[in-house]
Image (cartoon, rainbow, N blue to C red; front, side, top):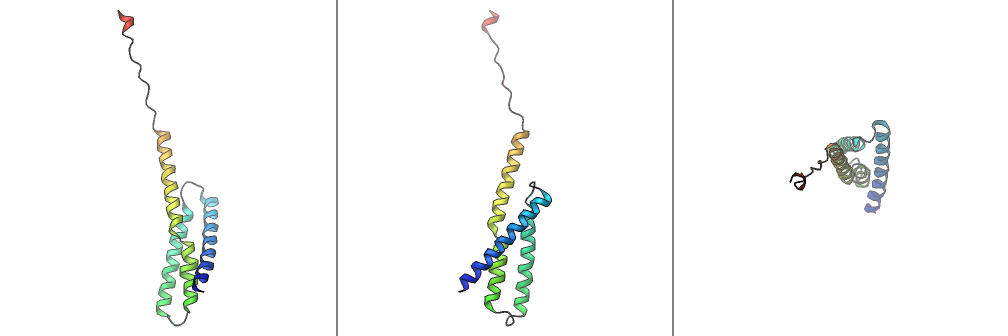
Length: 117
């Protein structure tokens, strides 16, 4: 049963992450993965806030609710794979820009030695 709770929460968190990413692209464009930055900062803050709350109010919130919110929703929201994918795409974009700016080597012609005889 606990796996199902985490599964449902992660689905909700993943959908929220996608919504933030779509909004960030519309607001800031494709130049930098602002969606991932926003998701990771906000999600980490919320996980810390909830962990602190749960530590001081251990008996107040049942284990099922803690798993659903932290491991499920916020775990699905801040998944590291999204960060890894965006970092790899950013590096690839930067690499393609640097090769587009770098001038191609010029073809050097060899002198024709036979014509000087």
